Length: 193
Image (cartoon, rainbow, N blue to C red; front, top):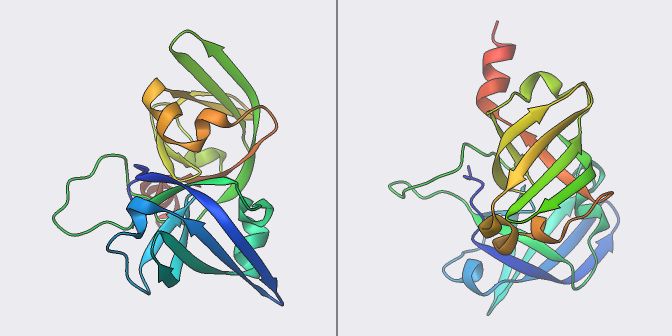
């Protein structure tokens, strides 16, 4: 379980593709500190397991399913990724409940910039539309955000300057893809029977 509060931007060091499995190595000073083998780390909002750790570097394995359903498939060496370690009992946390299980990949349709104002307009697939509500929570590339406007085929989020500086969303532009995880509480409420 995660909160969507990014701890660090890591840099992809290497990706090794094998049959039905890929290994992802990420350079990360802060997040690698105290991390053990088997720990869960959210990488651009996707929960991955640490299989190897060296000083300042973490290595993860990614199944084919993970690559097909997330933006991790398109990662290349030197790309930047948002990183967050799993929650620890007793810690304070902001954000919202984030599982690290992306619902789908969406595209940024528009980026609107003004002084101290950034709005991202994201394409909205009807499969997840019922979970996206104004002032509700959404997770984009592992970042907990509040939903602003919701249209028939899009929704918007607004970024404060701190979020732009401390996450990869500061560099995303129109056409870029993001991992979308809708609010787990909304899923349970809507799908209860």
